[in-house]
Length: 389
Image 1: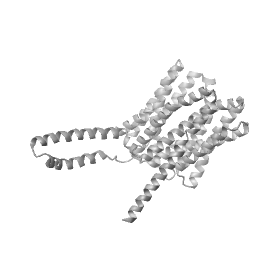
Image 2 (image 1 turned 180 degrees about the horizontal axis):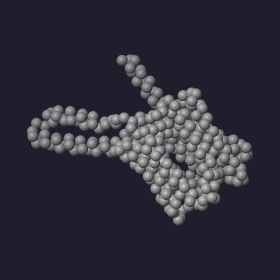
Image 3 (image 1 turned 90 degrees about the vertical axis):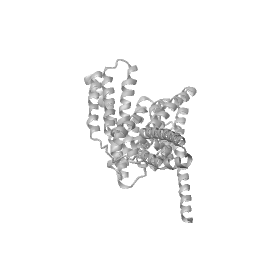
Image 4 (image 1 turned 60 degrees about the horizontal axis):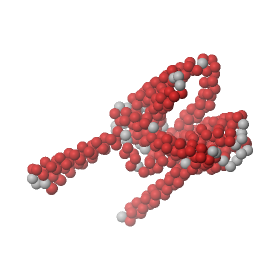
């Protein structure tokens, strides 16, 4: 959760490239220290904290570079990147298995830490100069200075009154300056955008639901009475459908222009339907079909999720905005993950927990149309007022 905020502060004072290199340092350090762990209790520090912070700092840098170079073909490029990533992840476990058999556990971890060093030249090549930054605080200070003499002349005629007014204005000015600096450092001004807040809310719950659903899905399939081979087949079909969905989106987005927010909403809607369906069927063939459909929809969610934010905010605000989204997603995960586990433990059944995960799609499906209706109504009222004038 804090990785995005750290990057936001670093990028305000230095550059995104420096923030990316700092994240690469965290990532490589965590990967290297994992070689020497002697207990699973040490994994939260090396793998969880260090590598997690590093990864969280590098991802916005990569997305910012992608947003800078691609505008019209942004969905196509993101789909291609995600497709290659998914293809590599399919074969990655098999490669690790071969390496462990040939070199052993510690040597494999050392090789992985060596591979992670490639992130340093990767971060160096990132494009991080997107033009001059705006400083709204300066205009506020100029406006306050313009009003200051007039306020003094009208309200206080005596030197004592002038001195008192100077102190009051100085205190207010210092308070506003501190507030503006704080908001600028963490890019919290983007929270004034209600549309962005609605995007963060909907995506945070959908991404949380998606992650927990696929983590717990094997246990649900075992509860259905499927054997190990059948469960493995379903998981493999899901992974293959995920990659196929990403490559398919590359082809579709190269032909037609796709509204990524509409894509995310439609994928969320059909994900809700498919999850309800998979909780009703028990036959292996139907479970496999629903799993493959969920894999395709998951691919579309993963591809469109960062693009929804990048298409809504400017290049300069994207890093801070994505950092706040990561923070919101982390808070949702920390708060609601134990609740899902509690539901499973209370009922001694995975099905109620999966229904709860399905309900997590509703904030996106309900609040996004409400936002669209409010904005459309407001625009119509504004247009009517302009015509009447």
